[in-house]
Amino acid sequence: MTEGQIPDQRLLLVHAHPDDESIGQGATMAKYAAEGRGVTLVTCTAGEMGEILVPELSHLAADQDDALGAHRRTELAEAMKALGVTDHRFLGGFGTYRDSGMQWHADGHAIPADTIHDNAFWHADLLAAADHLVAVIREVRPQVMVTYDDFGGYGHPDHIQAHRVATYAAFLAAIDGHRPDLGEPWEIAKVYWGAMSESRMREGLRMLREAGDETAFEGMDPDGPLPPFVCADELLSACVDASEYADAKMAALAAHKTQITVDGPFFALSNNVGSAMLGYEFYRLVKGAKGPVGADGLETDLFAGL
Image (spheres, rainbow, N blue to C red):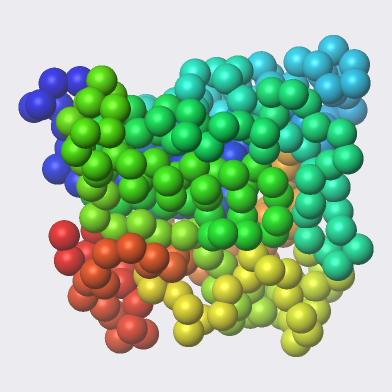
């Protein structure tokens, strides 16, 4: 990439597995890519331990052919086509880190599995993993980075590790003298954690239940406790209106066939709530100055103020 080819505004997203990006920020990615802004996705593992929802592909599972990672790599490529994103990398290169897997705690959040592969991302040396990302940061020079909160949304060890790696790498990349072989220092101006608005989630659940759908997001009560990935509205900093790109987000979700079914909760939301739910994506600003905001007190652009 030459200097003249670098977009003026550049966004870096750091995710744990294929499909996480489309679920969390697919509409924002499609919007920014269509507007000519730079969008770079770094995926930390190939999702080798994911659940396989397509019966005829069950042989790809880790305890059989152990070929799910390579298959999900192709799914991710199709999802990126749907979003119009051309710059995607695996952290350290494809296969460097393996999906760690997870299990459910009795309290309803994810925790590490009892048995974890030696090459699992959860076991990765933090400095070594961060330096892989430092090289990308210094090459791409993003003004904005998006990753998970410190709990990884719902406790998945790879999400937590992605948060740690992204946070450490953003710090290291700005240090003059740290690994000069990885490029010139670059400081990311704004760092966001992806978030789900509590009020929007309750609204969507309410509409689903009123439409007679009791299976989508089963067990979630519109008026009851919600999972840890749902964020209180007062903690939110930005809402990107990418409703024009909700269909692109749905196409990207559909590309992840082994992980997301067309009769699953996201498609139920699309059918019953539409772009009002799926096309608006929320964020918490954790580094940098908040830019101009809308009437609701939220930024409408992750590059606001830059």
